[in-house]
Length: 435
Image (tube, rainbow, N blue to C red; front, side, top):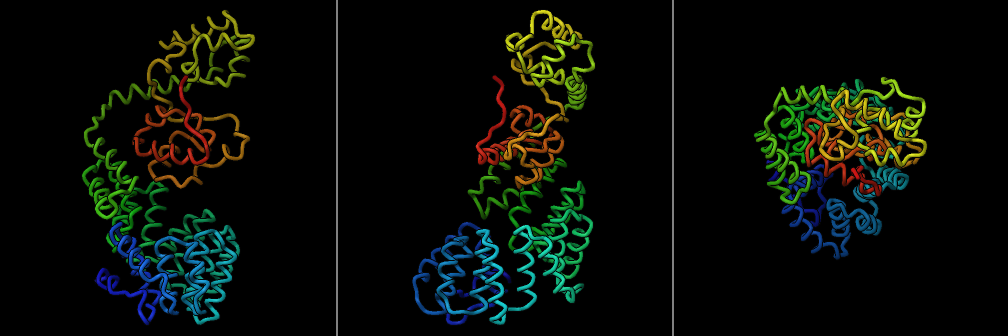
């Protein structure tokens, strides 16, 4: 039924559709690449028309296609009305022009836009701008919609999430879902919140409910696929990924996920081997300070930032001897310690090693980019979980890890590796390589 309604919405007719109808059309257009291509063709056919309704429809159409700059330019030339200013605000917000978006929302209110819609959109804009106090003040104006409006509770939840109030966020997402069981945004965000908090069963349940709403939320399908793969449900994971690829055949993350999931179906888990790896990791994590060394050796290793036995496996004899004040006597001391653990200098350079699951840095990077938190990178759920397991908190700590170290983390595959490499590459950074 929703598909039929969306198909029949005429954005370029004599009468402009309602906000709700335009939202149905937006969902339909973004459902698949083919639908988006067809809509883009329709927009191109009408965008040059000069009639008042056609101009407004063209501006809104450009916004739906994500061409926000063009949408703003087109909408600013349209006759004043609530639709013009609402979609002008949406496009300005997408480009980070938050003050302009607030001004446009004020104008929408002056032209009879629904008060609740304007106030909630203002709250969302202020939240995205980082003005959480302003967003809270805006939501107070909507307090009479408590227990009535799902969108009001959804915005309350987003604000609570932004302030770190997880309980408040969960409560309001649940309130929104109770008021509107098919509120896809609330279902997705609550599933995401459960996932981050480690409540995987609840996350799977709410992601399933989110993807059951038309059109299926692409990111919800991908996150659900990750969770299914984590619990060994590879067939279900592939089902989610195939559904994404059915409508978005060129989706890069889905393509990589599919390769990863297919390879996971044939993976063999050797419990005894994993136990041996864990024991080996514990040895590699042993601090150098646990061993009796001469003052010279200890000071040299400290200056070289070698803190554990595992660190010694990443450096050769020649590299150690090239360091100032580090001589043959110190070298013999180090080699004797490693021999007691059946290890040797440079071993990790010669053969892949299983990295420790925990890795602590004694100093925070001073550079502004390197000190950026990995939580700000908007990584997938799987990638974030693996970085958390490895105790990687900043970009600087991440760049000190090798591909092998990341891939050694359970459930961290090529998909997550490529995702991380792409994200840090945008900052001009890369993972460490063994020389």
